[in-house]
Image (cartoon, rainbow, N blue to C red; front, side):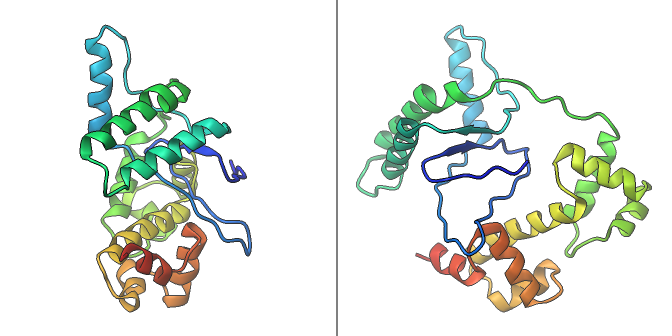
Length: 222
């Protein structure tokens, strides 16, 4: 479901939920993002359990927080984390304080039931797509896993909320981000990732990230 996000809003998105963040037409944008390592977060929750609190890592639902004080606290935490003058224990303390006292209490602790409909086949589809250097057509996917095109579309919509093609685009853009950070020449990316041409890759990348591949690479190099 599309949601319009404005300045000062926090969005919590679980790692297992596919999503896309796009700017409004002809609008510039920027955002702060924090990725929490699952193993580290599990350790944090285990510390709660050691204190007798019955907590576990749920599959959180996506959630939008419109609270100015929480946004300011999140921004302050990020400034601390990226401050080269701060010591590591100061950064850790700031992170823990922000998570435990401000953000975690707002997480929706409701587990999402995974659709059971052909779920193993869905995982096989993900493996096929992830191991492919280029894009795979719906017809080829159907042949590879022995399902109908309709069943494949239904599986993707039920599990990640995207069509098979949109899922592949999202995956390729994430791969492009990593390669751009590694300094891979722009001229090679479109071919490496299976896009039909440089223009197609450029448009897809900007639609997903809000910046051109060149702008992303320059920012990553700073």
